[in-house]
Length: 170
Image (tube, rainbow, N blue to C red; front, side, top):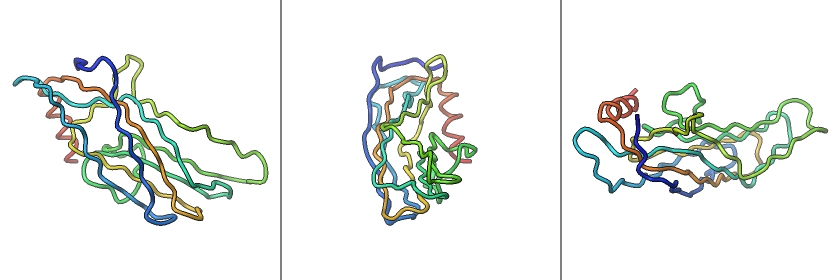
């Protein structure tokens, strides 16, 4: 069971721009260092609550057009991993399938990915860095995603901390 240290969420804002159109791009983002001491039987880590996304310079106008964005922990990925990968924190996939002459649905930005369960617990992150990745298909130019990660610091038992860190090794 985690103990909330921050009552109100903090946030990190950044963006990723593809190196070229339809090219997988990834970057590493350093996490804030908790300045709070926990004691020998507990550790202070980050709990991600939700992520706001806004995308720029994309054109989802033809069948097969696609934009993917993801955040992972561990070593930098070689593709935008889906939710079945153990190191994925969030994954967003937007694509056009079928006829495009009518019925395109506009997207409202910012788009929020809620990482909390029904009890208000978020995704625990015990890593110094996270990986931000993006790829596209069928785009005329390099695309960009702006994001804001809302988080708070929590204290967890050292056994839970060891389990989280061990999961990064797989």
